[in-house]
Image (cartoon, rainbow, N blue to C red; front, side, top):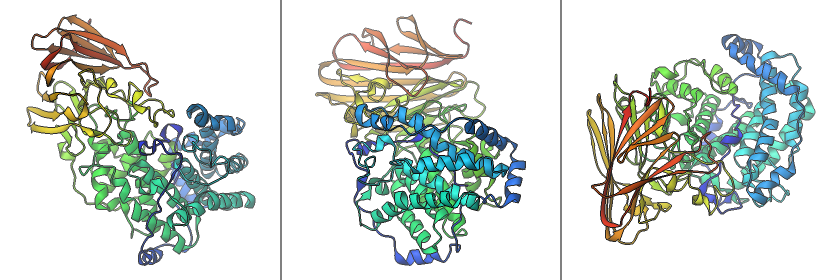
Length: 637
C-alpha cells in the first residue's frame, strides 16, 4: 500500500538552493522510446497500486486478523472525526515569506492532510461507511488549497498567487495520497469526489511534471538533485501515475523517466554507501526509493526491480551499518538526536537482501500505522537480491572511507559498552554542518559526548546566515578553535585521512584538518584518534598544531549532560546513569575550562553544552591530548 505521508518534521529543504526562490532548473532528458515500449508490454491494462481495494474484503479481513494493532487506526479515526476540520490559514502560510517561520503553518496544515490517510485506512479496515463523509470533506478541503507546496518552498509566493504550479516534497506526497485513496476506495467515493481528485492530480501533478520533462517548461531542480528530494518527489509523482493513470503507455513513460533520473539520488552517497545527509534523511530518501522500487516491481510483474540495481546495494546497508552501540545512532548533520532507522523499512530491506538481522525479522513493528499495513500487504515470496554484504564488520567497526566516517565498537561479548563515531568528510554537503574531525562517544546506552544534531528549521537554516547558528557551525561540535577561528564551510574544508590502523585490539586514525580553517601561517593541524578495546576501553584524541608565528589554540567537547572538574586535569561528564572521565594533557601549557550552553532552538529536547579547553598563552606549537574512558559506576553512588 502506498501511504507514505510525510509529517512536518520530514518536510525538508536543500542547502544547494539556499538563495533560490524557484524550484525550477533545466529540463530533464527524455527517456528512450524503445524502453517505454518495452515497459508498456509488462504493465497491466489498468492502473493498480500496492495492496488491495476495499472491495477485496477477504484481503482486508485477513490483514485485520493477522495484525490486531491495526484496530488503532479505527479508534484514531473516531477521535479525529469528532474534531472539526480546521480551515487552512493563509496568514500562517505567508509567515515564512514574512519572518521565516514555517512551523506554525506546518503544525496547522499537516493534521488536515493526515485526516485523508486516517479515514481512508479506517474505512478499508471497517467497511461500514461511517468514515466516508469526513474523508470526502477532507479531500475537498485539500483540493481547495491555493497550492500543495509547503510554505517554505514558495518563498516568492508565485504558487500561492496562482502564477505557476510547481512540485515539491509536499505536493508530490499529497498527489500520491489522493491517488492511493482513489485506488483503495474506488466507487465507495462519490463521483464528484473522484472527479475532484482526477482534476487536481492532472492540474497540480501530471501536467506540470510532463511539461517539465518534455521541455515545455523549466524543469524542477530535484529531477537532477543529488539528495533526498530526487527520490521522494519521483516516488510521489511516479506512484501517483501508476495508481491513477489507466493508459499503460503513459504509466510506462513515468517509470522510464524515474529510471533515468534516480541515478542522481545515488550521487548523494559516497561510493562506500555513506549518506552525507545523515540517518534521518537516509530513512526519508531511501525509504521513498524502496517504496517506489516495490511499486514498480509489482506493477511490472518483476521485470523492473530498481532495488536490485547495483548502485542501490551499498546505500541500502547504511541503516544497518551505522548503529554505534545499544540502539544509539549518529546524530550527524541536520539529524534529530535519537533517530533510528525505520523498522518498517529495515524489515523490508532485511527480507529483500537476506541479511538475516534478528532485530528486523518480524513484521509486528512499532512504526507508523500505515507502514504496518504496507508490510502486511507485501508478498510472502519477495525475491532475494544477491548483493555484496558488508555486515560482517559490524561487531568491531564500520568504515566509510570515502565518506570519512568511522564507527569503532568494543566487539562481541565486550565487558564494557563503549563505542565511538568519528566524523571526517567535508563541510560542503547537503544538510551538512561545519564538523570535519568531530566525534561522538556512546557509553552504556547514552551518547555522553555528542553531536547535537540539527536546529528547528527557519529561513535562516537554509539561507546565507545558516552558519551563524552555533549548533550548525563548528562551535557546536567537538573540534578545535584554531587561531581564534572556527571552521569555514564548503567542500574544500575537509578532513584528509593521513593514516589508519585497524586491529582487533585497537583502531587508530589520523586526519589533516588544515584545510578546514582559514588561518594564516597554519603549518600543521593533525588530529589522531586511538580507540582501545578490552577490559579498560578508552578513546585518545590528540591534536597537534603548528604555526609560523605564535597563536592561540582551543579544543572542545560537546555534551547534553553535566560536567564536573575533579582536579586541574580531569573532567567527569555524566548523562543519566552513564559517565566518562576525561584526562587532559597539554604538555605543561596552562589552560582553563570554558563552559557555554549552546542556546539555539535545537531539535533535541535538551540544550547542549560546549566544553572549551582553552590554552592560556600563544605559542608556535601545541599538543593537546584527551583520554576519555567510561566510568562503570555512576559517580557519587
